[in-house]
Length: 215
Image (cartoon, rainbow, N blue to C red; front, side, top):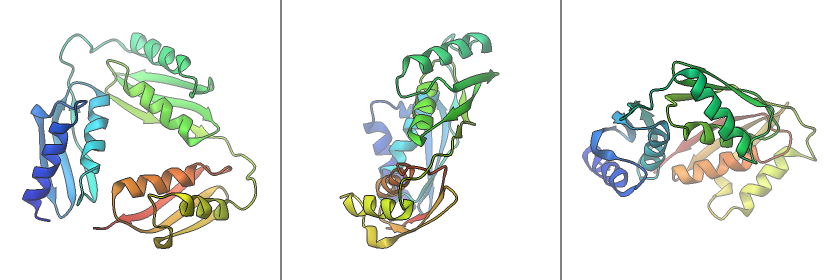
């Protein structure tokens, strides 16, 4: 696919997504690599723009250079922003009470511990939705857990069960809580399914993602 056609498809997807205001977003493409530049009104919108671009066939990677520019008085002091982030985290049942946050000039750093990757992901999602957050840094540590059985076999079984994955194209290795996935997939959706399946195995504290998206 030509760069011009890929840019057109990404622009159309951004326009199609009601969570994204694409008016101030510029898109460029270089052999499957998409770069997003411009401004958006919230951090959540910045993250949604990247997700929209990754949905487009032919996209191999997305460099998200969008800047968050608040359109009103949401540029708030750090103490108030931290209070709202902590309140939002507390009200979400998926986020453990062991996760904390600090704020510096609108940049939110999540700290503490969690048992599962989905809890870290949920904390980032919740914090990014708080008005006034410029960016989120995830410094949450996963607590080691005893693995139940062979982690490698469990992940490979999960790949086999998943209708969205071609398990034959992926290989899995494990060492001391780290899972390494290698191989090729046909879309970012397939890539994300594989990574999510690996994170769901008990005892996993790190996923070394070496999956290539090929079209």
